[in-house]
Image (cartoon, rainbow, N blue to C red; front, top):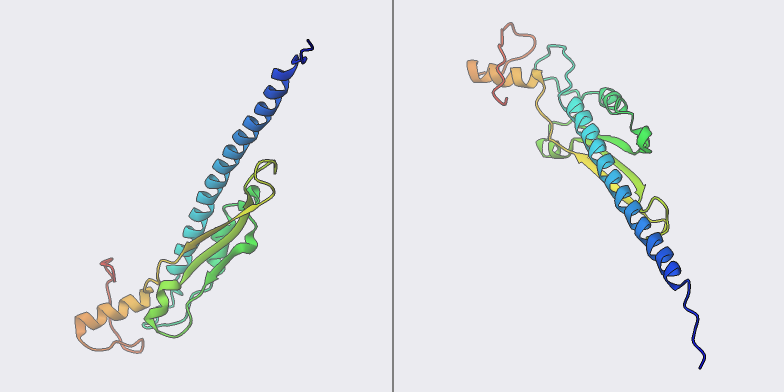
Length: 176
C-alpha cells in the first residue's frame, strides 16, 4: 500500500496563513493612518474656514459688504504641512461669499478639501483601490465687525447708521 508523503504540508499552510495575517495587519495599520490623516486634514480645513469666516477688512466702514480675501485661509491651511502625509494642497478650496447680501448663501461659505489615500499600503489584500476623503467646514458666514456695528447702532438708536455719521459703538460679543 502506497502512502502520500505529507511532510512539509504544515510549512506551506503556515506560510499562506502568515502572509494573509501580515497583510491584514498592514491593512488595519494603513486604515488607522488614513483616519489619523483625515482628522488632521479636517482640523486644518476647519481652522482655514474659521480664518476666512472671521476675516474683516478693519476699515471701520459700517455695512461694508466686501467679501474677505481667501489668502489668509490658504496661508493657515498651508501651515499644517499636509504634504508630509501625501495630501496635496491642490484639493483645498474656499467657497467664497459673493458680494450680494443674500443670507441664504451663508450656509455654504467656508472651506473644502478633497484628497485620496490608498486602501491597502501593499496593494495585495484589496488591490490598488483608493478612498476619496472629503473634509468640509461650512460654518455659515459670521457677521463682520462692521455689520455687527450696524446692528448695535440700529438697536441703540432705532435708525440706520452710516459711516458718514458720527457715532460711537461699543461691541459686545453677544452673538451679533
